[in-house]
Amino acid sequence: MSSWAPTKYKTSNWSAYNVSLKRRGLLSIWFEPQMVRIPPPTGKRGRRQHFSDAAIQTCLTMKVLFGLTIRQTTGFIESLLKLVGLGREVPDFSTLCRRQKTLNVNLPYRGGTGPLNLLIDSTGIK
Image (cartoon, helix red, strand yellow):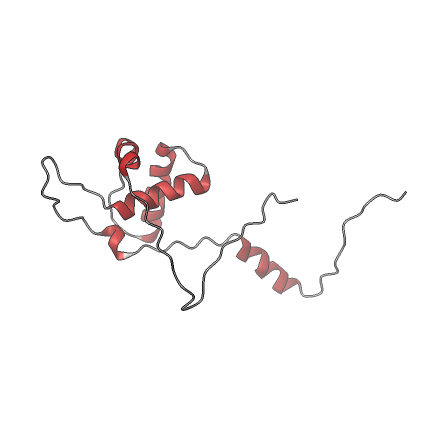
């Protein structure tokens, strides 16, 4: 019985192959305008929320996506905003902890009106 061997492909266009390898590590993040705005007063007692729900949801999404702790997430978001050049404040870990308990996540249904961006990561798939 012969053992299994992976298929080998001969690469003839090394420049295109190198470009495709570089594209695998591309990280694209879009910041929507509603994330950086300060939410209006709610009319309730107490201090007004300093960060919008979209900003909190983005931080928590990054936390889950990259498997970070909340304190690591705040550092990651700070470095992203610094790289982009946005001089915005990042919610601290206690704000993220408190707001994640009451955050209503809205996942709207989007019909097939245009192209859909789909991200598939094959890292670790056997």
